[in-house]
Amino acid sequence: MLSAAHGIGVIQLDTENPAESQELIPAKERETFGWEMVNRLATENSDFMAYVTHVKHFYQTGVIRPVDWRLD
Image 1: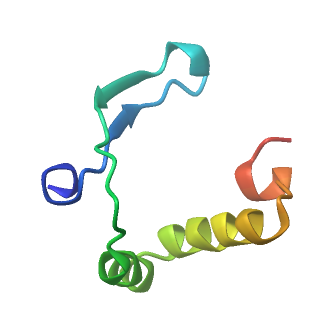
Image 2: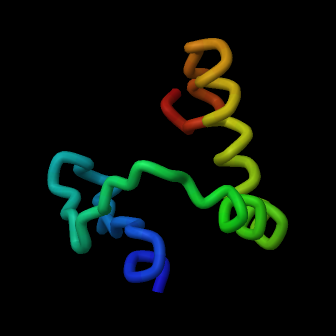
């Protein structure tokens, strides 16, 4: 539904071997961003809110904290 309405892609992530992950539905690049949808998703989904917070931190600082992205 999000893919059709907003161009969001879908990836089947292989956590054991990330190189074997598959793009099931490609994302569509857009010139504008649907902030209303981001706000709605962040309000309704605490996991998405955490993701947005991590992206904001990276955008502002350029620092990737492994603990935020489970890269350690």
